[in-house]
Image (cartoon, rainbow, N blue to C red; front, side):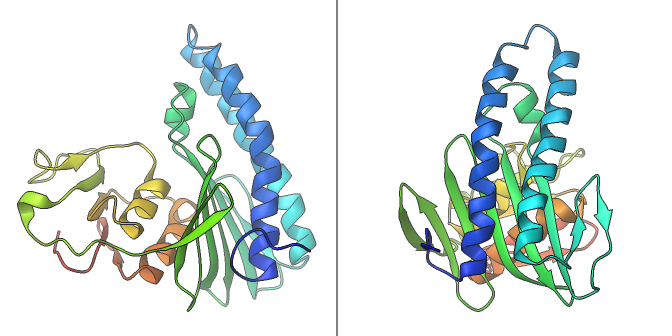
Amino acid sequence: MELLIKGSTELNKMFAALERTASGLRRDFGEVENLQQSLRGARDFVAKASARIEESVLSDLLLVRPNAGLLTPNVTRTGDGRDEFVLALSGASNFVRANPHFAITLALRTNDETKIALVYSPIEEKLYYAERGSGAYEFSAFHSARIRVSNLKNPDDLMIGYNVTTPRPGMGRGGRVTGCPALDLAWVASGKFDGFVSDPLDFAEIAAGELIVTESGGTIDMGADLIATNGHIEL
């Protein structure tokens, strides 16, 4: 197999599965743009598109590790008890409104530890990925570049992403709400954000982002709030 991105063959097979699904997802996005007169119709369409994502990607992944378990917001399948693929569509509310800021997030976990992580923006065709112990990378237009968190500390310089229902202190200064937590975490990893604060999220949506943040030098805490930072600030 010809390797598309820097990393293991297994990582490349997972990315190939995402790419195959993304072509159909881009067609679906074009259809959603035509459904904006009916928000309910758009929501129903996106829900069906999300189910197709799961079916398409997971069938490919089972060729990578046939005995692996599966975890998505809609599907749980017990596998061999060792390996598990974790998959979600992040930013579905954006997709419904024909906003291209959404992503497919995919992780391979072994013995309850994430080993491979991918967050793929199908409209922008940009991939953030990591393998445990090998750093985090951004891939676009056939070029991979290593990413690292920012080193900013001054509160006046910080840009923080939020995904919360109740406003937090300081949100008015340098705060951003994008609607796609998976990409928010990738943006912390790549220095576009200095931190991210969220209400608790479905683990399927953040499993990949957790590894990408830590492999880029950041920190992440999943307590009462999910808090990811560049490691130089406290939120």
